[in-house]
Image (tube, rainbow, N blue to C red):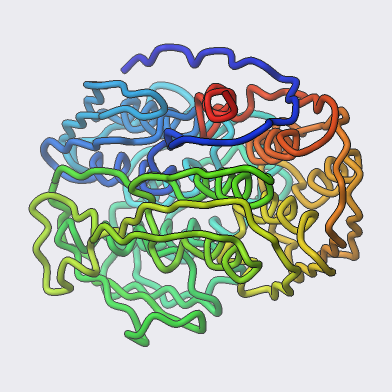
Length: 462
């Protein structure tokens, strides 16, 4: 499979916008795009993944499953999105890759693929760029070793590259995750598909449930205990031995990408933006709900569920589908909030842009227990604090806690993205309201998750 190169996006210097109007084009949900491609490779037959995000992270997963023996074709390109057709021989027909599997900057590719590879009887190496090589992998190695796979990494099994020697006879485990991580949970469940017995993953804080919904839609009986959707302790179980079935599905618009425009609309004095068909899964919508608590004028029009074609399980369409909504945001007067560790875990990818919102909110916003941000594409706590301070924000860091006092008039300045896509987009949104020119270092990193972001920004301000 070959993909066209991503375009270089300009400008990298952002001037304040007189107003913001329009409907931003959003990429397909990155989390769901990764999972749809990987599950298509694990299901024998042909699957169509429509509207997948076309950022570099998702491209990495598409290239990995192609290297394992799935036929991957880009059948339609549409702005920040692409349709993939995947024809797979199924897990028994996949083969050892001829070289290192390059995850690029994508921790999701590394962690989810390690779970799938754990049950495939061959040798693989998962590697990536310099940023990925600083991401922790011990949290993946521990449970997959307990299941019977052999995994090794550098620095005493803590950092990539990650070697995976899979076993066709994995053991089911009952495992409690040490940090809230949907990626770790998903890796264990993917390995559990071919394990002997019942695999259980326990979480102290419920994380996003895309993998569970998507497994159900492919015929896997994944059960949640307790059954109600709460933010507290939860366990997920599945029995090994069932086969995934191929299917066609459409990927919803990415709520994490939408968060940048929701904040832009809320903090700009003359804004009216509408975001179409955004995924509002209860385990992914924390940023939307936090912004509403802060006073953001967000109108939500439910569109029903995006359900995978042909999905009919005992769980019902409400469980296998992803709820969708159109979101409209207008200029707002924000006030401070206090976010605890559970809310931070639920909105972990959106914390940088929520920090920007807090700079324009009246009062003192506290964000407690955000240590997992240090294990992302960069140390996002240091990155967001440094960038917002450069723009004139009043922000302090105490360990894993962040305190922001607002509202603050931002002043254009040079910002350092640390090659992190979410920091690049956060500082670009800040530039829309800052006086003078805001310079975005390594702005091209936005293409990791949102190709075309800067082009959209210029279109909305025109």
